[in-house]
Image 1: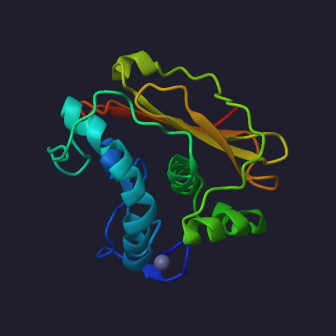
Image 2 (image 1 turned 90 degrees about the vertical axis):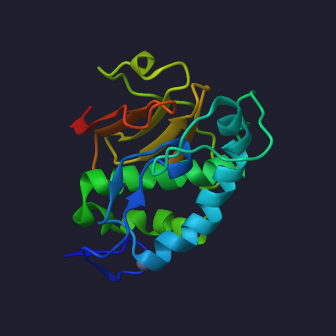
Length: 211
Ligand SMILES: [Zn+2]
């Protein structure tokens, strides 16, 4: 039996799947073992919706489908990549990184006390505090260029002390790196997801694997 990461409610086959890479980004990776219907819906209306509004003009300009529907948003198009360096992007990247970690490492990992603060932030839909976190991207055998010029990269990894950094580079842009957990998580693990926003079925993942 799986339980909601945020409220602890039991999850079952009727639980709606949660997107790890957000639907508005063309994300196809989903899990029914992360969030209950109510928590999924609440974050969908806040964190997810804010990023969806942000990327809608770019998707409209380039006809980029969502993960669930083969349709891009109506509305005014803008061919320039959306700005993704503020709290809207940080909250979405923190959420996606945490869900990537949680689905890869499992419930026993997420029960570690070190995750309480990150889970509390996720419940509120707020990003981690702005720590000085350089953009760190572990080496990978996967090649982002295989996923087109606007490839999304979403990753999370930990160091020897179990400090977990998550990051994302969306639409081929440079990306953001955030500290999800200062110490105490599973050490030396790496997860990565790559996806082509032009073709949502074209995605790949790596890990969790040791680094
Ligand atoms: Zn819940």
